[in-house]
Image 1: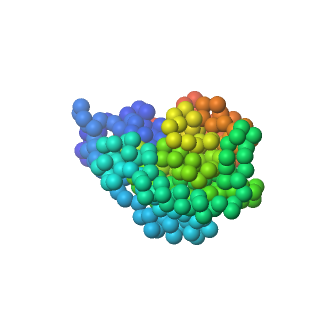
Image 2 (image 1 turned 180 degrees about the vertical axis):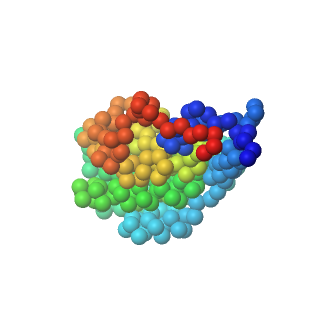
Image 3 (image 1 turned 90 degrees about the horizontal axis):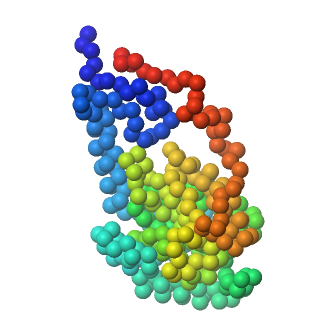
Length: 287
């Protein structure tokens, strides 16, 4: 029986804890063929995630099933190439979308307008914005499950939720303009994150209190890596609910607002720290 030319890495036992590309072994001075092919597949999946398009019609139907009204919008980036080359265009709505939101806001004129203690004018407590960002599959797969997990808790607590904005070719800051036009106290942007080589479907969540055009990223709180293999949508919703409550109560967000919530009951806390475990399984070269 011939002996394998692949030399396993002594850290191989750690691979069961992460999708990161660690302990791949070697064949001579190179990666094993299997590891190299897996890398090429992951790279192709990441490229596809960036250039794929969200099925907005399907997303609208899924939002309707959650009893959430939505409005379709578009950024100033007219196409994907422009979006990738001009990030600033993705941060603002195009003229027709801006007018659509203004018309929607006018149609809500009979809704009571409240003034917060700091003078902030609001119609809604929170508004959600879904933007494709750099991963269409992240929005397609993770956005609705995340909203489905948090909306019942918000409704039960009496939060006034604005119509959800679906923004094509949008970046995080486009939520500031949406929030300002709809006069919401807090915007929550769900957006496809830049795909990694093991996470092409990762969703990012960005919370901003008192949104307005021109805000910096220091004014936002971020929950990242929302996906089944990372932070599950239900657990992300738990974190988001805590931040929303704190943001509304304290009228802040960003660097001034820290996530001090206790670990969720749903987390696997009995495992401890795998880096200081007494022993790790190490496969022999024959396995």
